[in-house]
Amino acid sequence: MRVDPIIPFWSDDSAGIRSLFAALSERGIARVTLSYLHLRLAIFEQLEAELPPREFGLLRTCFETRPWSTVGTSTRSKLVPAALRRKGYRRFIEAAGEFGITPLVCSCKNPALPSQLCSGSAAQNDSTGNTGTRRRQISLFAC
Image (cartoon, rainbow, N blue to C red; front, top):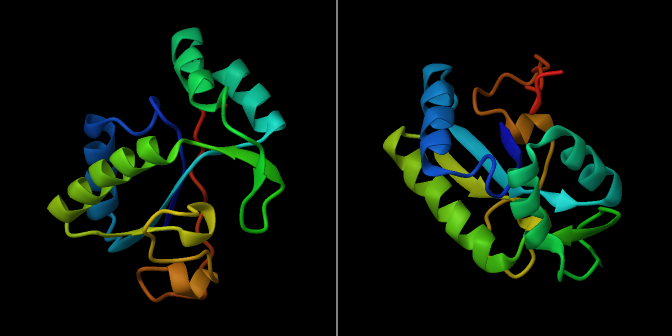
């Protein structure tokens, strides 16, 4: 299971993380791969349309001075500052432990940060071992 994208100041607060892991635990999820938002222009425009102005303003400050880079196989994007990702991942890792879930930080989307896993096949990321069932992605926004 992937928790991706994690959006700074929107989906990475301690209460929200705990609520997410409680729901995942109830569903028998044993392992998650974590990755923060990689900002591309089209995503930036969509977030501006979807997020409340205050939250979008906070998010925009994360990326204003960030350089454009190519990460993994991605198109050019801007990354959340490493210090902010480190703090956020610590919150996720701490909460995951409380619910018996193993958190893995995606290595292909986190250059220069300690990480455990690069995106792989559905079989690698399926915590139940059931490789024949396609799972539905949960929407970030209620559309």
